[in-house]
Length: 308
Image (cartoon, rainbow, N blue to C red; front, side, top):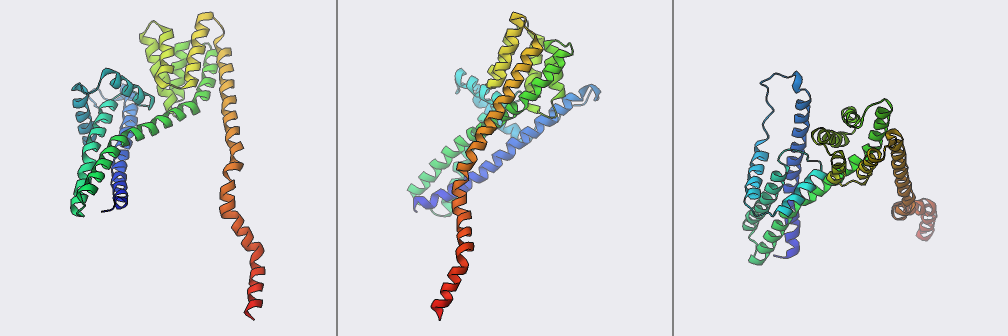
């Protein structure tokens, strides 16, 4: 069988597996939100009320990932890099690493298995079957990385979008007389419904400030944890205000103005690209219609004259 006939089949199989992986990730996000709400109302809940158990599929995926993680197949450096990537994608707690590793292993096994069933059903040649199985195994190994990169990009965009509003709230809190730790904690509580990603990062920073005596390390850890330039600048600004005794509200107001100006500059740069991006659609879709409207009646008259 021709290899070009295999690629659409492999793409269809991987599309089904990708949809299944997306459903699993969506279930993880839904359960994280549910657990967060339960933790928020726990003081008013019954003492013996328990959190809902995770989904059965996710549980088995996490079990498989936990076995691989504890088997020593992953080096400490690789494990640390994966944990850092998951944290930057928004997975602050839970079994994100185990689910990620388990999903990679299960897709690595399931994708070629499904491909083998199709290859046997349609009687592929030996060479075509091997190419199909190798392609599906490679795709199954790379699909979780692709999904994780998309989640990380979305999480960083959410942080970048909500950070200026969080800085404005911090300015209000500091001018009202609150200290650094109460300010971060209050902003995390107030901004949770509008910018959930920023609220989670601020809440974790506030927790680290409560349990550690090194304020500088707790603040700089927020920038290291997210990898976002804006949060790194915020952490550096807060450290400098503590170190040199400069007014906190003034420094935060200046930083918020700079971030909003940078956001406006990025929007202006995107708007400046629109004429270039619209050139090809205009040539392909608009100009033929204009030529048809302008030259259509003349062409009709010419055809009538030539017909006579």
